Image 1 (cartoon, one colour):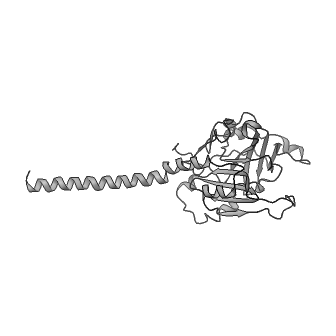
Image 2 (image 1 turned 135 degrees about the horizontal axis):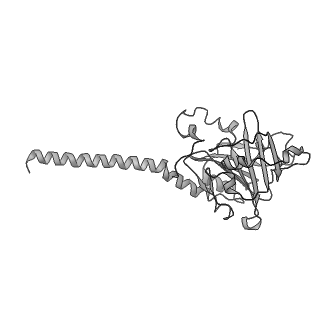
Image 3 (image 1 turned 180 degrees about the horizontal axis):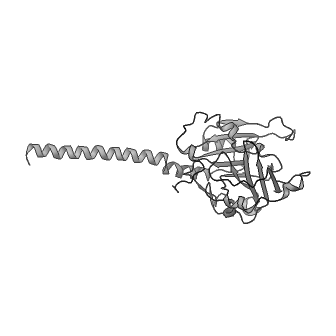
Length: 271
């Protein structure tokens, strides 16, 4: 092999090494921000627990972005004392509600259309489906409450279910939050309050369930899990421990017009 051929061979080897490092770096970046990140955060969400300390939750999720306390409102009882901590993660909003330093309720709202969370373990195998993917008719065959509220700039739909001892005496509220991903099918009514959500004095038309098309075409992108000590189902949804767009937009007011935040209502891959 002459000198020129040797130089060509060395050059080819160097080019291959540079290309491999570039590809490797790109793969690592993709993994950390994409599939790898989603895998890590699914594991973290599986570690959320009622009865845990507020410090445990912060160690798991990081520093909360917002902290809310009971507002002065005619909707509240004077003795109510709780603290909501709102955490912004790469793929979901997480909210914890603490009484003292003990967590009595928490919620997850999926915000990344490429992210989903299998809820079978979280519900003690009582519910099978993927938060951020499954519609309500796929998740729940039976429910103990149904709720819908819509206004000029807001809309929510929710269903509650209780399983007693098999699920740790917790209440599960599956919800479509406009801050999250997925499609929403409006029933055409401003207020629906059935079962758990029904209040004394509600007009009769509230207790008429929403149409089945609403359940079949609305994605559950949020779950709220509470202990028996925390029952807010009779209250307006603005007092639930969830991420609300009127607050979260303060953090993302300069969000880019492209990217996944613009595509929240569009389905993504199963990564």
